[in-house]
Length: 185
Image (tube, rainbow, N blue to C red; front, side, top):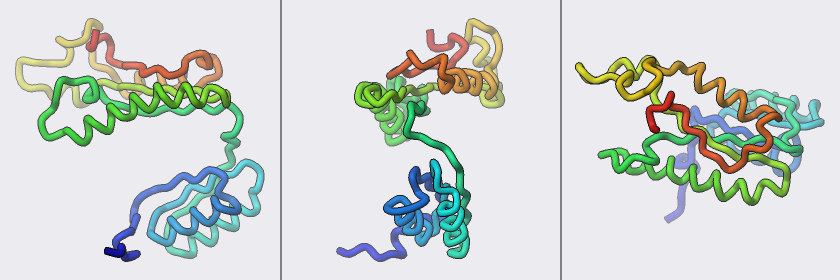
């Protein structure tokens, strides 16, 4: 059975295409935009071509932006998993849990492959922080689960990410960093 173009809509989705200012990358950007996806055109040196492509995409009625970033020299890839990937099972979350477990396996395997190209590949496993940790059932709080006796903040996650993508973390590779305030110890 053939799939119609209307079944392949990507309305509201966002696509980041590296090397998108020309050639195959530009064709992919235009193709995804034609299905309704908003596009981030990444380029290393072809600003004029990238901006022209952004104009073409915007004329299709979707959002587009060009961002200059050379991702060919030692970038850091950082993925986000979930504590669900390590849980014994969570009812009605099988697909979510499986996808997060897949991320962890991918990080470890891809780190071995990408290291030859001077890429580091890591992941984070953030554990609940404010405001959700204060929304536990009566009589039970996350404060009881962490040795630090306080809920984490989104900034606690951001601080770890900022370190992992910094060149000083260049020797950290293939790791899943759990950010839990000790709740998972």
